[in-house]
Length: 314
Image (cartoon, rainbow, N blue to C red; front, side):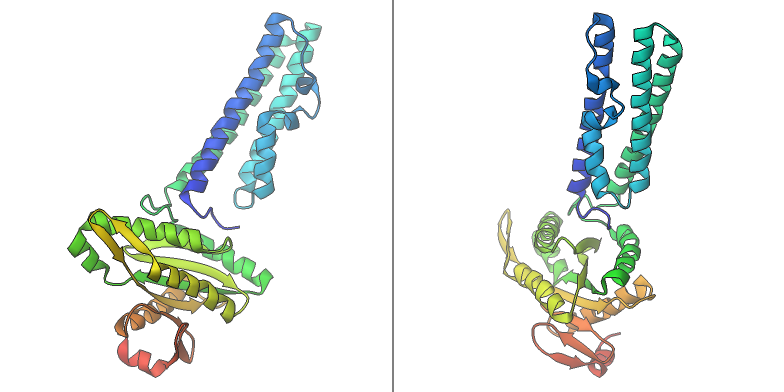
Protein backbone atom coordinates (compact mmCIF):
# COMPACT_ATOMS: atom_id res chain seq x y z
CA UNK A 1 0.00 0.00 0.00
CA UNK A 2 1.19 3.52 -0.77
CA UNK A 3 1.74 6.29 1.70
CA UNK A 4 -1.32 8.32 2.51
CA UNK A 5 -2.47 10.35 -0.43
CA UNK A 6 -2.97 13.69 1.33
CA UNK A 7 -1.65 15.57 4.33
CA UNK A 8 -5.22 15.82 5.67
CA UNK A 9 -5.27 12.01 6.03
CA UNK A 10 -2.24 12.17 8.33
CA UNK A 11 -3.73 15.04 10.36
CA UNK A 12 -6.94 13.06 10.78
CA UNK A 13 -5.03 9.97 11.93
CA UNK A 14 -3.02 11.96 14.50
CA UNK A 15 -6.27 13.43 15.85
CA UNK A 16 -7.97 10.03 16.12
CA UNK A 17 -4.87 8.52 17.76
CA UNK A 18 -4.80 11.27 20.39
CA UNK A 19 -8.51 10.83 21.04
CA UNK A 20 -8.12 7.05 21.34
CA UNK A 21 -5.34 7.48 23.92
CA UNK A 22 -7.45 9.97 25.89
CA UNK A 23 -10.40 7.59 25.80
CA UNK A 24 -8.20 4.78 27.08
CA UNK A 25 -6.93 6.85 29.99
CA UNK A 26 -10.50 7.75 30.89
CA UNK A 27 -11.39 4.07 30.72
CA UNK A 28 -8.42 3.09 32.90
CA UNK A 29 -9.13 5.85 35.41
CA UNK A 30 -12.42 4.16 36.17
CA UNK A 31 -10.33 1.48 37.85
CA UNK A 32 -9.30 4.01 40.50
CA UNK A 33 -12.95 4.92 41.06
CA UNK A 34 -13.90 1.28 41.48
CA UNK A 35 -11.15 0.75 44.02
CA UNK A 36 -11.58 3.94 46.05
CA UNK A 37 -15.35 3.93 46.06
CA UNK A 38 -15.72 0.18 46.61
CA UNK A 39 -17.90 -0.15 43.52
CA UNK A 40 -18.59 -3.34 41.59
CA UNK A 41 -16.02 -3.57 38.81
CA UNK A 42 -17.45 -3.80 35.32
CA UNK A 43 -16.80 -7.13 33.60
CA UNK A 44 -15.17 -5.32 30.68
CA UNK A 45 -12.18 -4.75 32.98
CA UNK A 46 -11.82 -8.32 34.15
CA UNK A 47 -12.70 -10.24 30.99
CA UNK A 48 -9.75 -11.88 29.28
CA UNK A 49 -10.83 -10.15 26.07
CA UNK A 50 -11.04 -6.73 27.73
CA UNK A 51 -8.50 -5.27 25.31
CA UNK A 52 -11.14 -5.67 22.59
CA UNK A 53 -13.87 -3.89 24.56
CA UNK A 54 -12.27 -0.54 25.35
CA UNK A 55 -12.46 2.48 23.04
CA UNK A 56 -8.80 2.15 22.13
CA UNK A 57 -9.37 -1.48 21.16
CA UNK A 58 -12.02 -0.42 18.65
CA UNK A 59 -9.66 2.18 17.17
CA UNK A 60 -6.84 -0.35 17.00
CA UNK A 61 -8.88 -2.95 15.13
CA UNK A 62 -9.90 -0.34 12.58
CA UNK A 63 -6.26 0.66 12.04
CA UNK A 64 -5.09 -2.94 11.74
CA UNK A 65 -7.70 -3.63 9.09
CA UNK A 66 -6.04 -0.99 6.88
CA UNK A 67 -2.40 -1.29 7.98
CA UNK A 68 0.30 -2.40 5.58
CA UNK A 69 3.19 0.05 5.58
CA UNK A 70 2.91 0.61 9.33
CA UNK A 71 1.78 -2.88 10.32
CA UNK A 72 4.83 -3.60 12.49
CA UNK A 73 4.19 -0.50 14.61
CA UNK A 74 0.51 -1.30 14.91
CA UNK A 75 1.33 -4.85 16.01
CA UNK A 76 3.67 -3.46 18.69
CA UNK A 77 0.84 -1.26 19.97
CA UNK A 78 -1.52 -4.23 19.88
CA UNK A 79 0.86 -6.37 21.94
CA UNK A 80 1.56 -3.72 24.59
CA UNK A 81 -2.13 -2.86 24.78
CA UNK A 82 -3.09 -6.47 25.51
CA UNK A 83 -0.29 -6.83 28.09
CA UNK A 84 -1.48 -3.68 29.83
CA UNK A 85 -5.00 -5.08 30.07
CA UNK A 86 -3.66 -8.34 31.48
CA UNK A 87 -1.74 -6.34 34.09
CA UNK A 88 -4.88 -4.39 34.93
CA UNK A 89 -6.85 -7.59 35.41
CA UNK A 90 -4.14 -9.03 37.66
CA UNK A 91 -4.14 -5.82 39.70
CA UNK A 92 -7.90 -6.01 40.17
CA UNK A 93 -7.62 -9.61 41.37
CA UNK A 94 -4.79 -8.63 43.73
CA UNK A 95 -6.90 -5.83 45.21
CA UNK A 96 -9.87 -8.16 45.66
CA UNK A 97 -7.69 -10.74 47.37
CA UNK A 98 -5.58 -8.17 49.23
CA UNK A 99 -2.40 -9.90 48.12
CA UNK A 100 0.66 -8.69 46.18
CA UNK A 101 -0.98 -5.35 45.46
CA UNK A 102 2.27 -3.39 45.25
CA UNK A 103 3.87 -5.89 42.88
CA UNK A 104 0.86 -5.95 40.56
CA UNK A 105 0.54 -2.18 40.68
CA UNK A 106 4.17 -1.83 39.56
CA UNK A 107 3.55 -4.37 36.80
CA UNK A 108 0.58 -2.33 35.61
CA UNK A 109 2.59 0.91 35.60
CA UNK A 110 5.40 -0.84 33.71
CA UNK A 111 2.97 -2.23 31.10
CA UNK A 112 1.34 1.17 30.73
CA UNK A 113 4.75 2.76 30.11
CA UNK A 114 5.49 0.29 27.29
CA UNK A 115 2.05 0.94 25.79
CA UNK A 116 2.64 4.70 25.81
CA UNK A 117 6.08 4.23 24.25
CA UNK A 118 4.58 2.20 21.40
CA UNK A 119 1.90 4.81 20.72
CA UNK A 120 4.46 7.62 20.94
CA UNK A 121 6.68 5.82 18.40
CA UNK A 122 3.74 5.57 16.03
CA UNK A 123 2.80 9.22 16.52
CA UNK A 124 6.42 10.25 15.87
CA UNK A 125 6.39 8.29 12.61
CA UNK A 126 3.18 10.06 11.55
CA UNK A 127 4.67 13.48 12.31
CA UNK A 128 7.84 12.55 10.42
CA UNK A 129 5.72 11.41 7.47
CA UNK A 130 3.75 14.66 7.60
CA UNK A 131 6.97 16.60 7.02
CA UNK A 132 7.25 14.83 3.65
CA UNK A 133 4.12 16.63 2.43
CA UNK A 134 3.92 20.04 0.81
CA UNK A 135 2.41 22.59 3.18
CA UNK A 136 1.02 24.63 0.27
CA UNK A 137 -0.79 21.98 -1.78
CA UNK A 138 -1.06 19.24 0.83
CA UNK A 139 0.39 16.74 -1.64
CA UNK A 140 3.30 14.39 -0.91
CA UNK A 141 6.72 15.63 -2.00
CA UNK A 142 9.27 13.93 -4.22
CA UNK A 143 10.91 11.97 -1.35
CA UNK A 144 7.66 10.02 -0.93
CA UNK A 145 7.47 9.50 -4.68
CA UNK A 146 10.72 7.55 -4.52
CA UNK A 147 9.40 5.46 -1.62
CA UNK A 148 6.04 4.81 -3.26
CA UNK A 149 7.68 3.87 -6.55
CA UNK A 150 9.21 0.71 -5.06
CA UNK A 151 5.85 -0.39 -3.67
CA UNK A 152 4.04 0.40 -6.90
CA UNK A 153 6.37 -1.71 -9.00
CA UNK A 154 5.99 -4.56 -6.50
CA UNK A 155 2.18 -4.49 -6.73
CA UNK A 156 2.35 -4.10 -10.48
CA UNK A 157 4.01 -7.50 -10.72
CA UNK A 158 0.98 -8.98 -8.98
CA UNK A 159 -1.71 -7.00 -10.82
CA UNK A 160 -0.20 -7.19 -14.32
CA UNK A 161 -1.11 -3.56 -14.94
CA UNK A 162 0.87 -0.78 -16.61
CA UNK A 163 2.03 2.16 -14.52
CA UNK A 164 2.15 5.55 -16.20
CA UNK A 165 4.25 8.39 -14.79
CA UNK A 166 2.99 11.79 -15.92
CA UNK A 167 4.96 14.99 -15.36
CA UNK A 168 2.60 17.99 -15.40
CA UNK A 169 3.97 21.52 -15.77
CA UNK A 170 1.94 24.75 -15.66
CA UNK A 171 2.31 26.68 -18.90
CA UNK A 172 3.84 30.18 -18.66
CA UNK A 173 3.84 30.09 -14.87
CA UNK A 174 6.62 32.70 -14.72
CA UNK A 175 4.32 35.14 -16.51
CA UNK A 176 1.66 34.54 -13.87
CA UNK A 177 4.14 35.38 -11.11
CA UNK A 178 5.49 38.40 -12.99
CA UNK A 179 2.02 39.75 -13.80
CA UNK A 180 0.04 38.95 -10.68
CA UNK A 181 2.70 38.39 -8.04
CA UNK A 182 3.98 35.32 -6.21
CA UNK A 183 1.02 35.26 -3.80
CA UNK A 184 -1.30 34.67 -6.74
CA UNK A 185 1.14 32.09 -8.06
CA UNK A 186 0.90 30.26 -4.75
CA UNK A 187 -2.89 30.45 -4.92
CA UNK A 188 -2.80 28.84 -8.35
CA UNK A 189 -0.46 26.08 -7.15
CA UNK A 190 -2.60 25.38 -4.09
CA UNK A 191 -5.87 25.25 -6.00
CA UNK A 192 -4.34 23.17 -8.77
CA UNK A 193 -3.09 20.67 -6.18
CA UNK A 194 -6.60 20.46 -4.75
CA UNK A 195 -8.10 20.14 -8.22
CA UNK A 196 -5.79 17.26 -9.16
CA UNK A 197 -6.33 15.59 -5.78
CA UNK A 198 -10.09 15.67 -6.22
CA UNK A 199 -10.01 14.36 -9.78
CA UNK A 200 -7.67 11.36 -9.53
CA UNK A 201 -8.85 7.84 -8.82
CA UNK A 202 -8.29 6.20 -5.44
CA UNK A 203 -5.58 4.05 -6.98
CA UNK A 204 -3.71 7.06 -8.41
CA UNK A 205 -1.12 9.17 -6.62
CA UNK A 206 -0.28 12.85 -7.14
CA UNK A 207 2.92 14.57 -5.96
CA UNK A 208 4.28 18.12 -5.82
CA UNK A 209 7.54 17.49 -7.63
CA UNK A 210 8.91 21.00 -7.32
CA UNK A 211 8.14 24.52 -8.51
CA UNK A 212 5.14 24.37 -10.84
CA UNK A 213 5.63 20.67 -11.59
CA UNK A 214 3.43 17.81 -10.41
CA UNK A 215 3.79 14.07 -10.98
CA UNK A 216 1.02 11.51 -11.28
CA UNK A 217 1.42 7.76 -10.90
CA UNK A 218 -1.48 5.87 -12.44
CA UNK A 219 -1.85 2.14 -12.82
CA UNK A 220 -4.02 1.24 -15.80
CA UNK A 221 -4.95 -1.99 -17.51
CA UNK A 222 -4.31 -0.56 -20.98
CA UNK A 223 -3.51 2.62 -22.88
CA UNK A 224 -7.17 3.49 -23.43
CA UNK A 225 -7.75 3.36 -19.67
CA UNK A 226 -4.84 5.75 -19.13
CA UNK A 227 -5.89 8.02 -21.99
CA UNK A 228 -9.34 8.52 -20.49
CA UNK A 229 -7.98 9.09 -16.98
CA UNK A 230 -5.28 11.65 -17.85
CA UNK A 231 -7.41 13.27 -20.57
CA UNK A 232 -10.15 13.98 -18.05
CA UNK A 233 -7.65 15.64 -15.70
CA UNK A 234 -6.07 17.77 -18.44
CA UNK A 235 -9.51 18.88 -19.64
CA UNK A 236 -10.61 19.71 -16.10
CA UNK A 237 -7.57 21.94 -15.58
CA UNK A 238 -8.03 23.60 -18.96
CA UNK A 239 -11.66 24.53 -18.27
CA UNK A 240 -11.27 25.48 -14.61
CA UNK A 241 -11.39 29.16 -13.64
CA UNK A 242 -9.03 30.19 -10.84
CA UNK A 243 -10.47 33.07 -8.82
CA UNK A 244 -7.86 35.60 -7.62
CA UNK A 245 -8.20 38.86 -5.67
CA UNK A 246 -8.26 41.06 -8.78
CA UNK A 247 -10.11 38.83 -11.19
CA UNK A 248 -9.86 35.33 -12.60
CA UNK A 249 -7.24 33.26 -14.42
CA UNK A 250 -7.45 30.27 -16.69
CA UNK A 251 -4.34 28.15 -17.11
CA UNK A 252 -3.18 25.25 -19.20
CA UNK A 253 -0.62 22.57 -18.48
CA UNK A 254 1.71 20.49 -20.58
CA UNK A 255 2.13 16.85 -19.62
CA UNK A 256 4.85 14.37 -20.52
CA UNK A 257 4.25 10.71 -19.80
CA UNK A 258 6.35 7.56 -19.77
CA UNK A 259 5.45 4.01 -18.84
CA UNK A 260 7.33 2.28 -16.05
CA UNK A 261 9.53 -0.53 -17.29
CA UNK A 262 10.48 -3.33 -14.91
CA UNK A 263 13.83 -2.86 -13.13
CA UNK A 264 14.30 0.59 -14.67
CA UNK A 265 15.40 3.34 -12.24
CA UNK A 266 12.78 5.93 -11.42
CA UNK A 267 15.01 8.80 -12.52
CA UNK A 268 15.35 7.31 -16.00
CA UNK A 269 11.56 7.17 -16.29
CA UNK A 270 11.22 10.75 -15.05
CA UNK A 271 13.81 11.86 -17.62
CA UNK A 272 11.73 10.29 -20.41
CA UNK A 273 8.58 11.99 -19.16
CA UNK A 274 10.49 15.27 -18.88
CA UNK A 275 11.69 14.94 -22.46
CA UNK A 276 8.12 14.38 -23.66
CA UNK A 277 6.89 17.33 -21.60
CA UNK A 278 9.63 19.60 -22.95
CA UNK A 279 8.77 18.60 -26.52
CA UNK A 280 5.14 19.48 -25.78
CA UNK A 281 6.26 22.88 -24.49
CA UNK A 282 8.23 23.53 -27.66
CA UNK A 283 5.33 22.52 -29.89
CA UNK A 284 2.34 24.45 -28.68
CA UNK A 285 1.89 23.64 -24.95
CA UNK A 286 -1.53 22.63 -23.53
CA UNK A 287 -1.16 18.97 -24.45
CA UNK A 288 -0.15 15.60 -23.07
CA UNK A 289 2.48 13.54 -24.87
CA UNK A 290 3.25 9.90 -24.16
CA UNK A 291 6.80 8.81 -24.90
CA UNK A 292 7.18 5.35 -26.42
CA UNK A 293 10.22 3.69 -27.95
CA UNK A 294 9.29 4.50 -31.55
CA UNK A 295 6.90 7.43 -31.42
CA UNK A 296 5.47 10.28 -29.39
CA UNK A 297 1.73 9.95 -28.85
CA UNK A 298 -0.41 13.02 -28.32
CA UNK A 299 -3.28 11.54 -26.33
CA UNK A 300 -5.78 14.07 -27.69
CA UNK A 301 -4.60 14.52 -31.26
CA UNK A 302 -1.97 12.63 -33.22
CA UNK A 303 1.24 10.63 -33.21
CA UNK A 304 4.61 12.33 -33.73
CA UNK A 305 7.67 10.51 -35.05
CA UNK A 306 10.45 10.40 -32.48
CA UNK A 307 12.98 11.70 -34.99
CA UNK A 308 11.24 15.05 -34.61
CA UNK A 309 11.69 14.79 -30.86
CA UNK A 310 15.40 14.18 -31.16
CA UNK A 311 15.77 17.21 -33.41
CA UNK A 312 13.88 19.55 -31.13
CA UNK A 313 14.76 18.54 -27.59
CA UNK A 314 18.09 19.40 -26.07
